[in-house]
Structure formats: structure tokens, C-alpha cells
Amino acid sequence: MAVRIGTLRAMEDMSQAERGTAPSALEIVRTRSLASLVAQEIERMILSGALPAGERLNEQQLAAQLRVSRGPVREAVRGLERSGLVVAVRNQGSYVRTVSAQEALEIYDLRAAITGLACARLAESASPAQMAALRALVKRMDTARRADDPPSYYAANLEFHAALLGFGGGPRSQRLYEDLGNELHLFRRRALVQPENMRESNAEHAAILKAIAAGDAPAARAAGEAHIAGGKRRFRATDTTTTPGKGRKGENDDDQDDPSPPPADGRRGGRTRRAD
Amino acid sequence: MAVRIGTLRAMEDMSQAERGTAPSALEIVRTRSLASLVAQEIERMILSGALPAGERLNEQQLAAQLRVSRGPVREAVRGLERSGLVVAVRNQGSYVRTVSAQEALEIYDLRAAITGLACARLAESASPAQMAALRALVKRMDTARRADDPPSYYAANLEFHAALLGFGGGPRSQRLYEDLGNELHLFRRRALVQPENMRESNAEHAAILKAIAAGDAPAARAAGEAHIAGGKRRFRATDTTTTPGKGRKGENDDDQDDPSPPPADGRRGGRTRRAD
DNA sequence: CCTCCGCCAACTGTTGACAGATGGCAGTCC
DNA sequence: GGACTGCCATCTGTCAACAGTTGGCGGAGG
Image 1 (cartoon, each protein chain N blue to C red):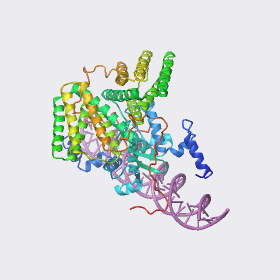
Image 2: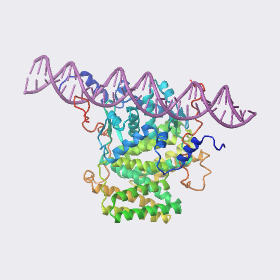
Image 3: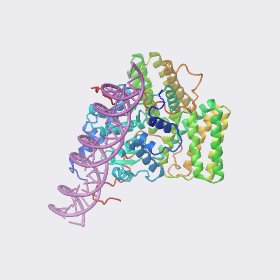
Image 4: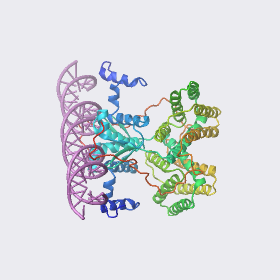
């Protein structure tokens, strides 16, 4: 109803409608709040390693760095706290969360379970278009592997898993998988993807697609779980703290409550000159 | 070292040491921030139904009601936004999240997957003490069922699942299961637990424990998944929107982006007199 | 020389205040 | 009489300032 009523409004709807394009800066300001942008930026800093695990988050330093007030920074940090990327101690500050080896293994298991679920469902419901998209991603990864281009492989791998979870699981599963992956990043910075690993990993991807294409739900589930288990194994192979494992799964006695919330030496206060 | 050095400090340590007891109000203020308490309170309001799904969260009204400033309220809401309980729209406000039927089913599947995982691991690692604790909880539920006491059953059920996830999965799994359960609460207020459901549910609990005690990991996993699947089925039986399902699993075409962020009529601004 | 106490700087927690946006209501112009 | 425009109350987004706490450093005392 009404054709020319509010051309401005119409323009807004248009620019909102066209997704995927560059969000045009003005639209960003109009739709996202400062706090959400700050959260996104801090999250990026953490995942990129600029803020390593255990690091303290200085509110006013971050605020000054991002040219905003402390309010949005605090709101952003509260959000990141809920999502498990940082831990906060009252009157002391927030720290980038440290993930123990045991927690990392647990997260791998969770990812395996939900990936298997998505694969199984996808085996019963995959559309030709979805299969084509997944196959194209595997092809991209294969190309990146041959070119020995780990960054490209890594990006395509992320897309593949996101598509897998989105098609087979749903938006909630997708977000969960992403969050778990982010937490995993906190355990020891190590983006090194070796050529052998790439080949092995992509072979598992192909196996997943094969089972899905065959409509074999149990096989697809097993393949999906095996893939994440393979990632867990490859992850352990490059790590020292997890290899001297006590035979199998760490028996979790219930005597550990908090594994030291303020993990490192909290250098704060005092008469130390500020770091500029 | 030093006996009477700082009796106050010593007292604080003492009160911190005694866990499980009433947190003594003063200790709460000293360890938890206002924002976290506000978040806890708002979360309670949402889960209890005082703030129904789709409801708008008025910041200053909440601030006035809780006798705090808007700052902590905003921080709390940002946290709840990250955890999926509320959605925020810029310059318009935050709303209690509405969960669609399809999302609810997806969440059930996720819970089934991680519950199955925990059961399988527990089948290989359960200690006698853990088994005893789980058996005691099943017994409590059975007692509650005989007494036709749904609230007690409900509470024990929560404890049972928390223990299951904590023993077999770990803290991360436990928290995840809890969060998913909270989201599920947002789909249609319906705490009605029928006697038949209680019996069926607890029978499934017993089946899980039997498989775990036998050390049969695949069987334990299947039992755990079947239990959540049973919950999903019982849930569907009491709901109308999910029963006219199209055969199987809703095929998720990618044409739905956001299912209306401002869900209801956002009554704001204008010259309406405020609701006191 | 060692121990202990007081001081102080830096930081977090919280509040109050200001600017901008939103959406309904009423008056006004065709 | 219907549609539109301006106005205004309400609320959110953001900022700046105040109060309280923390933890190390230096001086006083033994």
C-alpha cells in the first residue's frame, strides 16, 4: 500500500534487502549498536591471537583504542563472558579464557556429536543443490591442498562445516558449532595445517559426502564423527600436554571447582607506569 | 605465617571456604557484580514466565524494579542476548526470544546427541560413587512419581541430567545442556508433567543406568538418545503446531532469514501513559 | 636487615545526564 | 472525509564523572 510514501524508508528496505553486499557503513551504524561492533572487534582480536589466552582486558585501554566510551566496552565484555571467551573477576578485571587440554578434548567430542547428527539428518534430506554446494567446497579444498595453500583450505573448511551444520542441523546447530570452534582456538595458538593433514581431512570430507549421497544415515553419522575424531587426533599429535594421557578419558573426580579464575599474575594497580 | 595478621582477611577466607552454605549476602556482594545478579534475576523472570516470550524488556522499568541503574541492566541484557534468551533491535529495545516449533525440535536433537555422548562415555568411566548418585536420583524421581508430585520430579530430573552430563561429559557439556534447556522453556509455557509421562520418563532413566552399569557404551548412547527423543515425542504430543508435520524433518530451504526480530507490536514511544 | 603498616595510583563498578531515534496522536491541508 | 505532516513523549545509545577496591611501593619501626 502507498507507492511513494516515504522514499527514504523504501531506500532503507532496499539496502537491507540486498544481503551479501558491502553493508555500506551507514547501514552498519543504523542497524548495529556500538556494543555489538566492539564485541565483534574484541572477539576478532582474541581469535586472531592479538589478545592471547590469559591476557587481561583493560577496559579503558580498549575504549581508548577503539575510540569509544567504557560503556559499550563493558557491554561487549559481558556478552563475550556469556559466550565463554572471557572470564570476569569482580573488582579485578576480565581475562581471556584459558582452555585446558581436557576441556579442548571435551569440546572436540561435542563437535563430533553434533556434526554426526547433522550428517545423519542430511543423509535423509539433502537436496541436489545442497549436495552440489558441498561437493564444490570439497573441490575447492582439494585445489587449495594441491596448491599447498593452507589459508584457502582453512577458509573453505570453515565454509564446508558451516554448510554441513546449516543444511543438516539448522541455525542453532550452526551457531553452536561456531562457538565451540572459537573456544577451541583459545587452546594454544596453532594454525599450522600440514599438507598430510589436509589430504587426510579432505578424504574424510569426501567420505562424509559419499555416505550422505547414498542416503545411509548411520554411515553418514559415523563418517561425520570420525572426521572430527580425526581432527582431534591430528590436534593431539601436535600437542605435548595431551599426549601423555592416562590411557583413556580423564576421569573427572568432582574435587576441582574453579581452575583458577585469575589465571596469570594480575598486574594491576600499584605505582607501575602505564603501558602506552 | 602470622597468626593474627588481619583477622578480617582471615574471616573472609573462612566464609569463602565454606561452600554450599547460604552465601551470607555480604559475600554475594563481594564476589558477584550487580550486572551478574541482575542477569540472574532477569533470567529467572524469563524462565518462570513472568516475562513471556516476545515480551519487551524495558530497561528503565527493570532498573527501577530492581533498584539499580540502567548500566548493570544493559550489561545483563547483553549477556542474555549472547546466551540466546533475548534478541535486541537497535533503537527499539530487547525482546524475550521466541522459539519456533522447528527450532524447538532442533534443540531436542542437539540435546539428544550430547546426552548420548555423555552416556556412552559414562558407560566406560562411571565410578561406583557416580552410579550410586544417579541411582539415588532415579529413586527420588520414582518416589515423586508415586506421590504424584510433579515439581519434585521435575527438580530431581534436572539434577539427574545435570549429573549425567557432568559425570560423562564435563562442565562444558553440562552448561550447554542447561542453556539448551533454557531455550526450550521459551517455546510455549507448558510445565504440565502428566503421571504417565513421569513413569515413561523414569523408565528410560533406569534403562540408561542399566546400560551404563553394563559398560555397554553403544547401548548407553542409544538409551540416552532415546530418552531425549522420548521427551521430544511427549512434547509434540501436547503441542498442536508441531504435530501436523510434513512427514519428516522440516526441509530447511534457505529463504527464511530472520523470523521477525521485533516479533510483536512494539508498543513504545507515543503519548501513551506509562504502565506503573 | 627484616617486618609491617600506610599511602597511592590505577582500575573497576555504578550512577546520572545528554543526545538521537522511534512511533503514535492530533491538527491541517487537499 | 481521507491522507499527510509536524509534534511530542518515551525510550535507547552513549558518554562523563563519582565512589570503592585492589595491589604494589616506600617509609617507619623493631
